[in-house]
Image 1 (tube, rainbow, N blue to C red):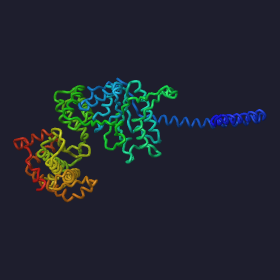
Image 2: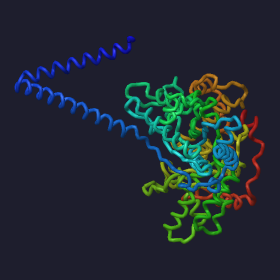
Image 3: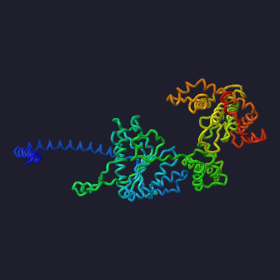
Image 4: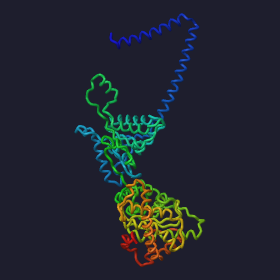
Length: 555
C-alpha cells in the first residue's frame, strides 16, 4: 500500500470513528442527549441557512452587476447593407475585404492563414463607425454584439472582468455555430488607455482599469484551448490529440482618441488593422444627401449639390439631423415640402443656437453691435477670397449678441501665411471699426482678441512664418511659448490692426451701409452683403491685392 492510499484509508477511519462515537453517545444518553443534539443541529442549520442566504445575495448582486449593456444581433436582423453606408467609398472597399475573409474563414485557414482578430475604427463622432460594424456583420451574415466600453467598468473589482469574459465566451459559442462572430466595442479608449497614465478606471479596490485592460488583451488573443465539455472529456481520455481550433471572433472597436490607446492593444494579433473614418468630402456629402433627400419631401430649391456645398466638414450623422430638422421646420410653418430656406434655418440653428432677440437692448447698444459685426463682415468679404460670407446678424444666438460667419467655397487642407494674416485682420476688424467710427472701445472683442493672439502665436511660434524658425511646441507648453513670444506677437498684432484700420476707412461707405441694414433688418445673408457692395462700387469684390506678405507682416 503506497502513501497516498494509506492517507485515504486513514481519513476514512477517522471519520468512521467520530460518527461511531457520536452514535453510541446518542444511543446510551437517553432523551436529554437527543434534545441537546437536536438543538445543536437546529443551531447549525440556522447558521447554514444564514450563510447560504448571504451567499445567494452576493451571487445575485454580482450576477446583475456583471450583465453589461450588450446587444446581440443575429444575421439578417438589421438589414443594413453597403447601399446604406454612404459618403466614404474607400472605407467600404476596405470593409468588403474583411467581409470576404469572414465569409471564407474555413478556406482561408486551409491555405495556412489565420483569421483577423481586431479592427480599429478611428475618426470624429458621427462618421458612421458603429454603423459600419453593423454593415460588416450583416454582409458577412455573422452574429454581432454591440457593447459600450464604459459599461464594463464597475465599482467592484473583478466584475468588469466577468463582463468581458462572458461576452467573449458567448461570442465563441456563436462563432462555432455561424463560422464567425463580431464584437463591436464603442469608446474603447475608456478601458484601453495607456496603463502608465492610469487609464481605464473602474474598481473600488484599485487597479480596476489595468485589470480590465489585461482581461481584454487576454480575451482578444487567448491560448488555443477548446473549452467544450466533450472536447475536455476526449482530451482527458487521450482520444483527442489534434490542435485545438480557435473560433473566429473579430473584435471591432471605435475611438476618437487612438493616440491614447495602450500599445499592447495595437500590436499584431489584436487591433492590427486600423481604418480612419473621416468626414466625407464634397462627393461623399453629395452621395449622403442623395440618400437622405430621397426619403423626405422637398422642392426643387433644396438640391443635393447646393446642400453639399454648404456643409463642408459635416459628418453623415449631422447631415441626417439637418435634413430631418428641415422637414420639422417646414411642417411647423404648415408647408408640405421642405425648401432651401428651411434647410438654411436648420443649419443655423444647429450651429449657433435658437434666435433669442434682446428686446430691452437700447438703440445705442444695438448700434454698437451693428458696427462691430459690420467690421467683421467687411473684412471677411474683402480679405477671404476662399470663403463666402454666410450670415451677419445682430440678433442674439446662444451667448453671442451677434455674429458674422463665413463658409469655405471648397475643402481646404492647408493655409498660407497670407490667409493666416487675413484671419488675424478679420478678428481685429471689430475693434478697428469701434475706434474709427464709434470713437470708443467696447468689451465685445474679448473672444476676437483671444483668437487673434492665438493665430499670431501660431504664425510666429508654431509654423515658422515669421523671422525665426522657433517652435514653442519644443517647450512642451503653449503658455510658455506665448510668454516667450509676447513682444513679437504684440508687434504683429499692432501691424495688422493698422492695416485693417486702413481697409475699413477706405470702405467706410460699405461699413455704414451694412451697419444700417443690420439695424433695420436684424440680419443679412452673404448674397445681400454682395448686393450692397455691387450697388456701392458697381462691381463684385475684386481679388485681394498681394498685401498679405512682407508688407502686412512688417508694416
